[in-house]
Amino acid sequence: MSRLSIVLLFIFLSGLTRLKSQEASEAEIYLITCGPGTETYSIYGHTALRIVIPSKDSDLVYNWGVFDFSTPNFAWKFAKGRLEYMLGVYPFNNFLQDYFMEERWVEEQRINLEQEEIEILFRLITENLKPENRKYRYDFFYDNCSTRVRDLLEKAVGEDLLYPTAPDPEQLPSFRDKTGEYQKPYTWLNLGIDLLMGSPGDKKASLRDRMFLPIELQIVFSEAQVSRDDKTASLLGYPVRLIDFETPSHRPGIITSPLMVFSLLLIVMILVTLFLKGKNINLAIDILIFMVFSMLAVLMLFFNIFTLHQQMKSNFNIIWLNPFIILCLFTLLFRLRTFLWFRLTFFLLAVFILTALFLPQFINPAFFPLMIILLIRSLVRSDFKWNPFNLPHLTQL
Image (tube, rainbow, N blue to C red):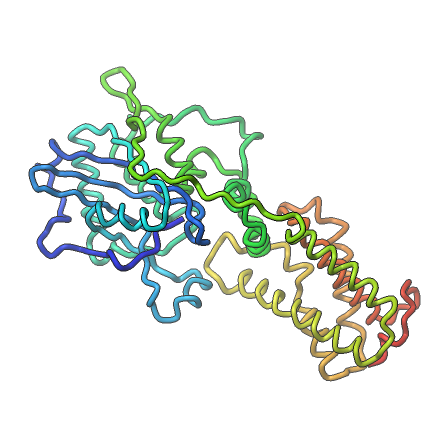
């Protein structure tokens, strides 16, 4: 969603970024909305503010979506939820050039603000520009480049801002539904996000909530009104397309979709389980299987317990990707004569599969073939008397 660039981060020493109240009468304020890109971080679009002050020959973009790729331990901080975003200010032409190079459309809409409201906006932005306030802890749903602009305009306009009529609460989409609209063409990315996003992602998103997505913010603000002397006027003017590119289209292939790939893998694993009799080869296969699932179980533990990303907490996928899988792997690696961890893994998988539809979290259908693979291989290592596969060679470590 955010515009991830550090090359154009300028806080001008000349004072061009200082917004003075006496300049409010001539300032032109625009909402900038940028279309989705093809990179993972850019598929949700982007939002910024453009402020033009003709007398100063100033045309700057205020961008709350900037962070530094060279930050030490960048990936670790991002995973932990400790990555800081910042407010960047730079010439609008540079901003446009960046999006032109990425072939992403850009639209602007003049914001209908009175002088007093612009003065309030200037004070808020100036406060944001202070060194102690310039950085903030990014939150995908509640504090990002889009919500920062929304919050500023709400404070500047105050009670005179009138949102469109909210839909029926029963018809509200969830946060996962809204992000899924942008992720839908990228089935493997969507699968990964469904794996890591916990039950908070299935919370209903109100009209205001869904403005964490830049294009949703544009849609809602385009329908919003402001009260002016007992009359109402549109908050935003008509959109003007400054850079015109088509939104990237990507048609996912059915054969290469996660559900198809994992279903074929399940069929292969059933055949292997039924007909491959070698003790050592089965041991090697199970070590590989439980190693892969152990890595996923570690991810579940990390994002449920150690990350600050609230969207990844309370993730019910930890029931089937549970820590017992890791103990199963150690049992295989050290050839221990115990069946307890396999049995616990089997029962948790069975319960999860039977109750998945009733959980307060969407479970991607592509996960079920993986669950059944793990279920089968846990079952044949559990040494149950009623094992339907009846393959004693698999229980001999």
